[in-house]
Each structure stands twice: as C-alpha cells, then as structure tokens.
Image (cartoon, rainbow, N blue to C red; front, side):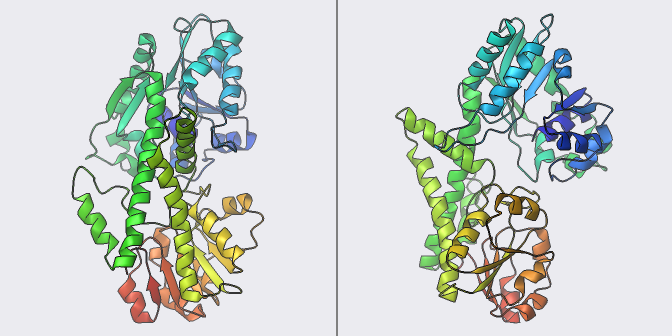
Length: 446
C-alpha cells in the first residue's frame, strides 16, 4: 500500500517520491498508472505525478528527505514468523545516504514484529555512524488500510498511531499529518474523487505511544478482527444445525454497541495478504514467549474448518465430485481488489481438485494474479462469469463482487447441468432464484 500512502501525501501537497527496485512499477507510476488495482488510485496518481509525486528506482532522494517511509512487504517464513529481509535491506540502503546535517524521521509503515523499530535503529546507527535521537529517529506508524477501500481509509482514518520515544520525531509527524487531520482541499476535490466525499466521517483520533506498543497495536487489531469473523462463521455452522438464520442472529448481535455490526458478515473464511500472515506471526510470537494466544489459535483453526465446511456442503449435495464440473465466482479474498494471496478460493479450489472436480473460474480483477500464484492448478479461466456455468453441476459464489449480484441468472440456469448454487456470502436473491428452478444454499441459513 506504499503507492496509496505516497499518492495521498502528494495530493496533500507534500513533495513525495516513491522508490521501488521494480522498474515496471516505477514506469507505471511515472506514466500515471497504479501498480495495483485500487479504486480511483490511477486517477490520483495521474493528477499528482511529476508535480508533487515522483517515482524512481534509485535512492538519491533519501539525502534530501525529511521523512522516509518503509513500506515493503513482510512475508511469512516457514515457521510463521515474519521475514524482515526487505525491511533490513531498505534500512541498509537508507543509512549511508542520510544527511548528517539534518534530522530525518524513518517511519516503519510495514507490519512488523514488536522491536523492529529498535532493530532498524541499530542497523542505521551501525552503517551511518549517526546518532539516534540527534540525526535520525525511527517511528512506528502502522498502516490500517483495507484493500478495496484504501483511499477512503487513508484520507478518513479512524485513528493514526504514532509510536516513538523521540519528542522531535513527534513534532515532525504531527506536522506531516496536519493537513490530513484538517482535511485540506477535500471539499474542493470531492466531486472528482468519491473517496473524498465523506462529509459525515468523524475526525481521526491521533494517538501517540511508544514504538513497541504501536507495533503491537497492528497485530492485535488484525487478530481481533480475525477472531470476530471466525466466531460468526462458527455461529453460522451452528445455525445450519439448529435451523436458525445467521443473518438475523448477526443483526441482533450488532445492535449491541459493545459488539457492533462490522465483521459479522458470514463468508467461506478470511484470507488476503494481512489476516493470515499477521495472526500466524502473533500466535508464533506468543508461543515463543510462553504466552500462547489460545483464542487466536482457535480462530486460525476455525478458519480452516470453514473452508472444509464449504467443500463438505458441495459434497453433501453432489455426492462424489469425481468428474463433476464446478464454477467458481470470485478469486480475490474480497471485492474491489486484485489481491488473491491466501484467498479462500485458493484453499477451496485445491480441495475440490483433490476430489476430482473440474473447475472453471472467473473474477473481474484477480485472474491474472491467481494464475501466477497457482500455475499448478489445472483449471479453466473464463472471460465472462456466465461461462463458468457451462455444463456445471454447481456454481459457488466466493467473492461478492457487484457484477455477480447483477448477473442474468436465467442464462446461467440454461447452461448448467445441475442448477445448484452455494452462496457463501448469503447475498443472492434466494427466493427469486428458487422460483427459476435453482437449488440455492447459503451458510447458516437452513
């Protein structure tokens, strides 16, 4: 999400340079395009590039920077802990280029384990010979952007968390975020960018703490949301057994303001580039320090069970899946993104293939990335969602893209060998589809 953060600061008038070692990404940004799919990001980059936004593959601009954001990936290692190779490499590149005649703030924006600010500080001190607190300071400023809604989140954050023990760094960060907190120029551009047209959004909370607590806040937040999703999915499975309606249960729960209605939407499980990685890292750390987070462990196990549960539903309906054709609608872990990393579709499709099913898939934005990450999958990629229904014994809706809610279902019905739909998001018009002749099943809606 570094490109989102950079474009936002550039929009707010800060002279911002994106540095990436991938020349293809840099060329895309220089041409006014986004290297990732995110609604309205192309337009924002196009508006600011070569004005307040710049992009390069070298590190020359580091010497003149007041603030340097580290926004690199932090993938998981085999044991579940975070691989900090990219963070370390960037720190090593930054260190010799710092200006000794000025004070530079280095910001960890990436999701990193507790203690990483101290680790980066040590690397920079050793290589540069400069003094922490005098020449530079490392700040933890975790990113809370949701893929698919990143621009809305960057311009209207619930909270901005700043973790540092340096008073001088606090002053620099307050100045950086001042225009965002005051919503500088939002109204002027609200008709051009719908992400800026949020006049009823409450003001952001600006929260300062120490670096370790800031690092912990990101992990604890994502793990809690994962627990909440796993919980409502478990409730859905119990509703299936007891004959209750999980949508009604979730709505009734959400009316309690101590609980709230967010993240109480049933699904085939949580996925993406953040939740799986962050929950496993937090659990692994807790186990290493003898303080196992058993609730987080249960949420991870429950999520795997939810993937299995969806496959079991299909098996229960079709019996043997050997030779059966199943159409999959949605490969990304949520709508409005092209991110398929650790998606529910990846796990569920793998299990269906193991059972001998033939798989046809469609996604408005995620097919190219899914193919890249799953080259071994012998599946058919369909240009149109209707093609997934051709001779299909089942259609499985995994991602609730708006496009799928507006399909001509009568056409899909005419193409299918067996008109069965598993709606894992409980969003399709069931009574209407049943009237057409479909057998529609949801999760927790028996």
